[in-house]
Structures are given as C-alpha cells and as structure tokens.
Amino acid sequence: MVDCFLFILLPLAAYATPPCNVCPAGSPGAVGGFDDAMLTLSTSPIGNGFATNTSFSIHGVTGQQNNREFVVNLGLTSNMGTTAKSTPYRDKVCLYTGVVAENGTGDVWSINPLLTQAPNSGSYDAQGIELDFNNNNANRGETDAGGGLAPPVSYGLSVTGAGGFRSTSAILVSGPGVHRIWNRGITFANDCVTQSTFQDLGNPSKSIDIRGNPEYGIYQSSKSSKNYFAGKTTTADLVVEGDILYSGRLLQQHDQHETVDLLRNQPSLMQQGKIAVRTRGCVNVSAISPIVLARKQYSGVMTSQVKRILSSEELKWETSYQLTALLKPMPNLYVSKLVEDEQIHTGNDLLFEVCGGSPEGYISWQITHVVL
Image (tube, rainbow, N blue to C red):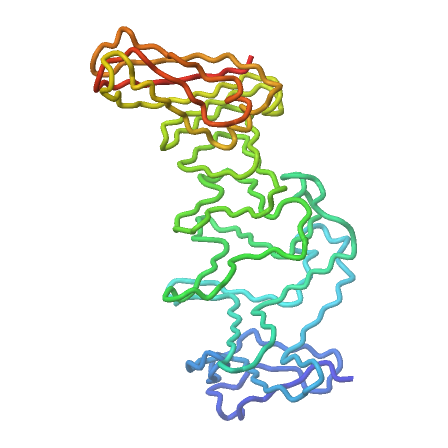
C-alpha cells in the first residue's frame, strides 16, 4: 500500500540549498514536512502564463475520454473530535490555505482559482468553483430571523473574520469594465430556499442600495407575490398593477395634480376604516360669460387603485367641495353641478361644474370623499 508520493520536478542540483525532506515513496504511515519550503521553482501557471516562483507545481493534461480525472485529490473522513472542549480543538479541515501579510508585502490572495474557456472550445458546462453541500443529518436554522442562526448550524458558504478594521466588501462580483461578462450577478434556482432568499439581520445605513441606473430597481413578475413594508416608505414614482394594502398614511402626488390621502384602521383596505380621496387642480377661466365659468366640466384623473376603492358599492361616502379664487375676488363662485353617485361607484372620472366666476380668472378646486 502506497501512502504518499514524491514528485520530483527539478533535479536536486537545481536548488541553491538542499530541499526540505519529504516522505520516501512506499513508506506506510510516513509524513511529509514542508515547513521551510523555498519558492525557487520557476513555472508558468496554466491560464496565467506570467513567470512565477513556487515550491510545488503540478501541471497535467487529460488522458481519458470516458473517465473522470482529477489533477489532485484530497480526502478526509472525520469521525473524531466530538468530545473536544471547543474550537479550534475540534476543527477538522481537508484543505487549509493561509496567508499573513506583513510590512513590505505586495498584493495577497489566500486562494486564486482560474478557469478560462478557450475560443471555439465547444459546448459544455463550466464552473469556476462548485461547492456541493450535502446535509443528510438534520434540519438546521428552522427558527425565523436571528434565532435560526443558533448553533448547531450548517452554512454552504461562510464569510467571517476577526479583524479590527472594516474591509471594502465581503463579496465582489465585477468584470473588466469595458463590457458586461455576467448575465446574472447572483442566482437562486430550483426552489432551493425555504425561508428568506436574502435576510438582513444587521443595522446598516442601507439594506439594499441601488446606485446605478437599472431599468428596474426591483422587478417582480409574479402577480401572486406580496410586498410588505412595515416602516416608512418614500418613492418618487410608483407604478403598481396589483392591489396595495396600507396600514399607515399614504400621500401620492401626480402630474395631474391629484393627491390621494389614505388612512386605514382595519387590516383590509376595502373594509371599514377612514379613507379620504382628495382630487384637486387649478384651471383657467374662459371669457365666455361675465359670471359663468363656461359651464365647463372639470375632471380629476383617478388612479386605478382609487377607482377600485370608489367603485365599491358597500362604501358610503361624504363629499365636500372647495373652490378658491386666485388673483382676483370671485364672490359668486360656486359648484353648479355635483359629482353623481353613479360616477363614484362606476369608477369613472369625477365630473362637476363650476359657475359664478369672472372672465380670465383662475381658480383652484378640491373635492374630498370620506368613507363614513
């Protein structure tokens, strides 16, 4: 039985000093020692051919058409350590790489994989790193929120540290900058997540920070999914195709000078509660009559959500009107035709008439419907 191999990559005479000892080939139970390895072996790494010094180098070429091939195979079966007092005494690691950067160092990497797909190399799957994590023991992290992180835990990938200063980023997905090289930054597929695809348990300044110019900041294609915002939400432009449930105060201002003020005390927006819909605008008075504002119909443009609220025949409304003369007095200004109930329940634009003004004058108007 052969327990270890000796790879002689250069004649021993090529070393300035004798190399460190390794286990003799064919010696059962022998252990290799490279504690004082010298970086004197010159090589050109595969895919990154810059001249490089190393103490250990293996280059290979595939030789089997119908057989799996590994250049290096490391394996560890762990069946001891459960009674050890604590970490690090109970730690079992198959491959450990460590770098300590001290004064005078250049740029450092603890591990630097590389995969290059050569032009015209064919149609095949390619992965820089594949991490297969097989939990056949027990469910971990079943409790919601931070309670699910209590030991024992199982993490596919853990990014931690113990430094005294903040680092730039825990994960960076980047490229050359002259063109895009990724179709997706991070992908979750095959319905693999049960609780939260992304979970922020900290207290950062911003949880999701979009500083570029994406066409969609957040794109949700499923109409059955829900969005929950427990805190204050501010938005410049909000386009919603589905229903919105409010538990606080919502103020919306549109280009058509429509303001919607929704206050809700019940879990459902369509149930009983205090709901106010205010539609307002400013119009120019046409000079057709000295006292009549052209008997023109003015309409407030309703959003689809407001129309849906107004169209509910189960709700009873109290309507009030406010007209304000601008730039000059209009003592005879009044609403000559009210908004009809049919207009409210059908969800159509609200139509009303104003009279009693003066020619070439301006007025501002507001109608308010409050659920009783």
